[in-house]
Image (cartoon, rainbow, N blue to C red; front, side, top):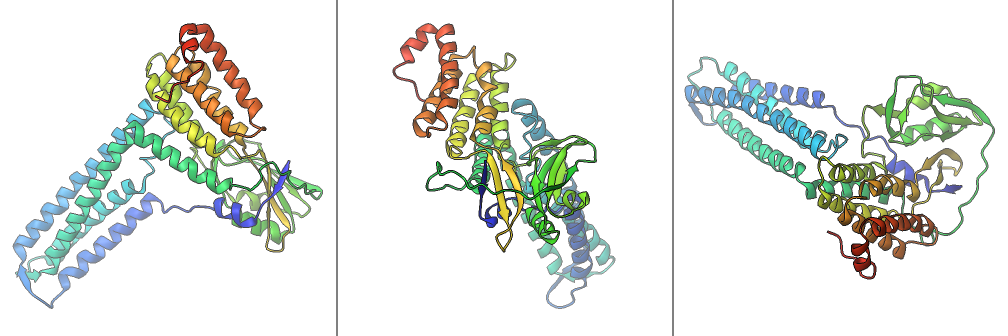
Length: 412
């Protein structure tokens, strides 16, 4: 099954999101701090103040900021460990949050400013009041950043904010990749592909495909007058020798395709529509494990799961064609469909919920809601899973099954 889409849709979503590395950010703030520390004490215009108290303040602030850096890393270690053991080790929202590394970079830059300004003042009897004013402003800014960081850390160890954050990110990528259409039942157009010229394989050690630079890939294919059919999608682990893409029509070196891919050690939300379902399922599975035995948490995860499954109900598995400005197909990619989301989100959770009537009833309610809102295409998939849940509920908890059969309870 293939489908043609406006080139701007996938190009806007599957564009490479370049992040400034944490080390470069810290270096930038250090350089700014050094520059301010050298320049500000050299101001000769305006009112001045005795230098000795200013030097004492700068030293105290610069050394005190080092304690703030320790707080930042303490929060980072605490939250990362908490999230890995309580929710899922694949949850990296706080670790990757820009506020963490920006606060750390600001603290390092502020320490550099204070120490550099102290040395620049030297043995002067007086110094411009701009020095303590700027130092005070930097200190208040640092306190504000620490407060935001602490609030973010508190939210990252609480269930509801974590589920909301995962759901929001999942909704964003689903809305971008699967725009609503007037008639989802309209059959897609079929576009024949040119002859196959070569196949690009992954030549390196195993890695996770995190992003596809669709703009660069489209430009590369257009320059070679080729059609690139991607076999893998973001979120897939690439093994050595994995077939990545087929090149049709034109001649294209493998390196040109590999340069358009961003890989790493972990899955990210940037272009992975399945990750949100995986994380919610992981949280539910951990909550339903015998070691934790917290079915109420699983029910909350299923609440969020229902929202994502309902939002993605119109998504269809198939190939999407990306065209150039002239309307010629240049890139073809297979996007996961609603069946993939349903399998990832529920097929592991249902067996784990067998000993929890609360989780089984919530799963039954979820499937009934989806079936009442979905189209004919989704009914068989939902009906089979609903029959599975009904059978287990009736066999394990017959009294509860009879009492709730006509009036399924609300979530929670």
